[in-house]
Image (cartoon, rainbow, N blue to C red; front, side, top):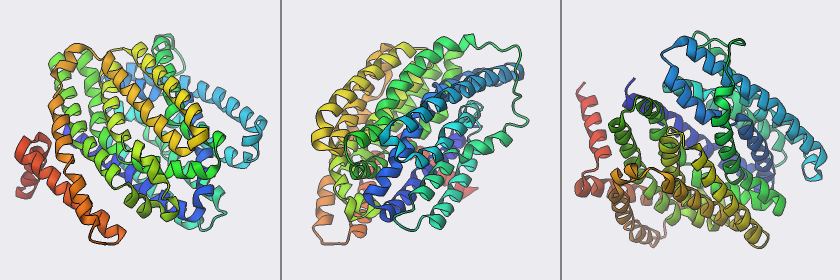
Length: 478
């Protein structure tokens, strides 16, 4: 299947990952209020942290391994079986640790029923096999399955969550949305791979997984434990405000990384076959795409943060806009971090360097949190996560081979930034007309998008716009 078709399906998946949180969270936040949504998010984030740790980095490592052997059924069966069994064993170990903590720490045990419900996130995490399907480049299958599960989850949310006391139903629904895909995976594996128990070589994965796991473990502290740490250091309403800001700031990230994710199997193949020209071409495409999409996302979130918070979470969450001043940077930093980490460092086996970058980030996160959170609450967490991602992304860039850095179109980043400075006067003019919040937001988005895409096309001959227009014209003539 072509890159364009794969991207189309992965974009569908990414859009569903963006749209559903933008529907579910505003509804739930208005029903449960900051305290209730903060309490629920604390539980879910805590369980997700353990689920990510249990995966040992297999969701990233597995894509590369499956992509290398997908044409050899025997090797495919072996690699899949080895990684699946490793994940299964680690899950049960992590689950025991999770339950021990829930029953022994007073802050957790007072909500032990909620944490027990959330064990499904850890237990069924073993069946999270997107690494297998993505390695086979079956993006269509992943997209349709995910869209179906999220649609059912949305129906369940509207059916069972109606008032402020419905925290338990909300956690049930969110658990289903997180792991519903995993149950379906059991049936989708038929005919594609066979689980083996003999003749397996677990040792070949050990060193790679140790580095990747160490990296993921360190990174998970600042990507998932931010909410958990805030829950320990501040009250649950602070978690609610932070969750509102971070969900909206991160909502666009799946769309930004979707294009790069499609290219990962091909990057692995290009490096395996020592095709440096293809590798460089794929990296150049990803970098240009991130510059094209992430820069306006940053400016849009920054300039329109109050309007966005009011629309999606309500005026009671308006304080969250203060945190978005810093979290607006996340699409930009995480987008570029994704490219350098998973299209450069991982395929080249630079796992030690990735781990080092994550340690730098972990140290930054812990120090800034300890200093700022007790005094500034969720705003301190927002500052810490922005600084952490900044440190990590620049560390990835530092460890990237110089020959790859030299071929990157750095001017595309500057071009996007220059155009986006025009957003501010446009938005100020729109806001001076006294329109309601929705009208202001829609008019600002449409106006800024038209200016941005027009100038990218006219001034800089942006290839993504040209290819998109060519695709639409071709479709209309067929």
